[in-house]
Image 1 (cartoon, rainbow, N blue to C red):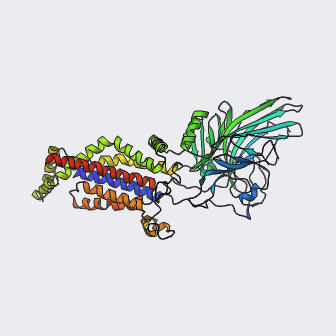
Image 2 (image 1 turned 90 degrees about the vertical axis):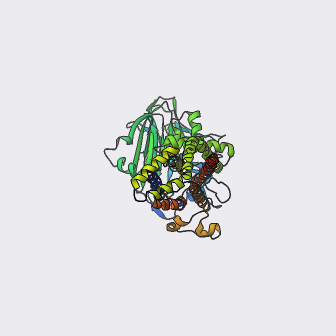
Image 3 (image 1 turned 60 degrees about the vertical axis):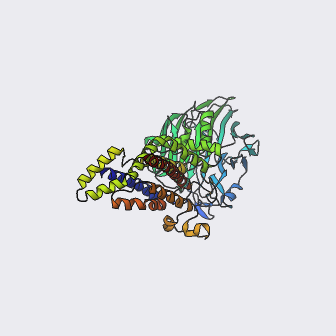
Length: 575
């Protein structure tokens, strides 16, 4: 009896965990808030340059982009522009990713210029040391360019010369994906020494809309001094506000190499300093009429004699956190732990291999749904010995049911004696009443690792399977309340739990069939509870990603086949 209680407890805990995940599961991500005209906000400012609040009318991004001359960015992965006023990277759109699957959906805007409702941009500048009066370029400076287009085959050089005949240059190049190489050069043709140091920063104005789900990090991310730092926007507000006289130790740090920036669920922008240059890193929150968040660094001080020049190099990643792209940069550019920009979670030792395995299968089959099926088969092969022993024991249990029923009738009023006889029967026949629990317990970590991979990695974002499944990272869209797609109706959130799709129904059916192959629990109450489990799981998993339900369904089908084969083999052996 204790063994059956343990089995029931294990399954109950599994259901409880899944229900908790379902409760906290975030709803569908809607289209980001668009820029609004006539909204009055204060403008963004540069690094450590306090300005008085100046009211500004916020405009749509398209209107802001036409206000200044720009260098266009055109690659297979991104489009956008560099603003020649300030020479800042403030306009970037991801060509391969859309907000939704709608035909008229817009592409994802990663960076946006000041003057829009949510500015998000990258600066590259200089500061002078001490009380020098050297004229430096700033956000109002108009730069000249030697080309109108930045592409993977064409670099761009921006230039500006001050009244003292000091020339400042910025060289931009970009690859076919999301990596920019940026060089800041200073040519001192003046008659005086120039003590100067470079800075680079990423600035985000207004707190961005986040999913706010506990298994996902959104906000500040950095890898410096071989330590991964993840802080949300509230942490920056509480610990690194510009108005604070004493800031948390993580707000200012000396380092060399690494990377730092801001991450969203699928995209990020990070600065990648030259690994051989010492830097001072700082993270800040400020409020100059709007909340602003900044991450950046300053380089070493350069003393440039007349007639001399210096160059300061570094890189910028701004794009999708695609695993194979990040891995390639680790190999080709020696960027440390760059794949950790993906939020693998505490159980990275499981989620990473799961992600790599599915991507490996995808490279051969060309469809992530098929890759999940291949991964499921691989897991069944790895767990085959455990499952085989479990199903073999369960088959014996099913064969022993008549004898178990006889013992129950023989000792109706002596439960202790009945349990003793049952234990003797199990031992004599080599049956284990809790054997069916082991595969379930092993499957739970795999299930949640796949859930994490589906939730945080971009590979299956809007990735289709076949038929009606157009996005494996989203729930089955053909629910029962819309008659499986026949009735166009936007189901309210409180009804979504009963809007069961086709794939969850298939999963529930396979779970029910698998349960029919198992021996029924001796206790009538347990038997009733086990009988409703397929229905419970069907409702609970209906809101999970289609890829996860696909995994569970295929796993059930393979289990049914294996269990049926073993039972037939045992029955044939005893005939």
